[in-house]
Amino acid sequence: MPGTISRRKLLRTGGQAIIAGGAAVCAGSALPAVAASRPKVKGVDYYQKLGVATFINAAGTYTTLTASTMPDEVQAAVALAALHPVHLIELHEAAGQYLAKRLRCEGALVTAGAASALTLGTAACVTAGNDADILSIPTDMNSLKNEVIVQKSHRYDYDHAVRNCGVRFVEVETLEQYEQAFNERTVMTHFFNAGEEHISREDWVRVAHKHGVPCFNDAAADVPPISNLWNYTQMGFDLVTFSGGKGLRGPQCTGLLLGRKDLIEAARKNNSPNSNTVGRGMKVAKEEIVGLVAAVDWFLAQDDAAMEAEYRQRAERIAGALKSVPTVQTQIFIPAVANHVPHLVITYDQSRVKIAAKEVMEKMRQGTPRIELNPGTGGPPASAGLPGGSNTIVVGVWMMQPGEDLIVAKRLRDVLQGAAAA
Image (tube, rainbow, N blue to C red; front, side):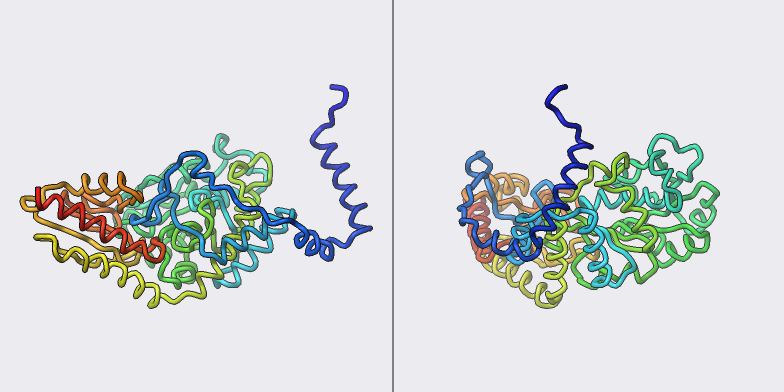
């Protein structure tokens, strides 16, 4: 159409303009002055404007509850990154090199969440060494290795992220079955770090490497402890993923893919902003990349013992406020693997405190301020090992803001005492 310009032509002419502009102005020297001259703008509370209620997070780092909140240092880094454009591929590469060095592994890639890392890591294993195969997945798999070995107990709600690459799972239950499952189409083995462990991590890695096959560990929710950020790559897993928006406290839509340098490079080629790739829609913005790098720096500066002590104190304050409620018992529980932090577990005799835990959850949700309890409340024991039952309330304390534990304590006491008096 007359008067229009193609995207390709726009990029070409735009690039020439950037080069011309660069001759006249040194990019680095002008930016601080520009930033300093910007007037300060007061932010609009769009949650309020849109009618979306905020809440006190007494649940944990659940995606549907928008996971964690970012520390001040991370928020500040995100805000600064938003001020200026950069070349996205350059930023990805620089961030990856920095993170790999800090996290003691060969390579690193910031992804659009841990689920994205599962897809990109699988794509890396399928296409490694042959860039032409990037166009083939997930539909043209006849000439490609496409079998992923997994423990049957490790099949989970994130299978689809792996299957997006056109692979199929081969399930095993014993070490002997695992040994026998390898063939010429085996492309990867997959381990869910929080899954029921019939075959140990060490055996999983050893057998995979004996067959020359890379092994992937999904450890999305498995920090703290801090050392897990390098424990699994140093154990021998070729690829490991962590969520960026859970214990790391980075932007929610970020993840870490760590591991072998060649596989990380192959994952990068399958990722956005490269077109015609399985990861093209998994874009990570400059603000999110910088935010996750800042979150890793923040997290590495923390102390496991100090964090646990703080979470225990929160749990103990809530438990102390419930002592006057008849039959209420409390315990502090730390899941063995995922979300390895203190949780408060509250139980009571329903014949005396006449309310189901699910109803307690709803009353906490309906109050002001709104409070969300751990979804294990009133249900069967969770996969992370949290106790369960219709008279069991689970409080996740680690994502609370200072002082919110006291609000949660008062509300729980009011609800439970009211049910005891009914």
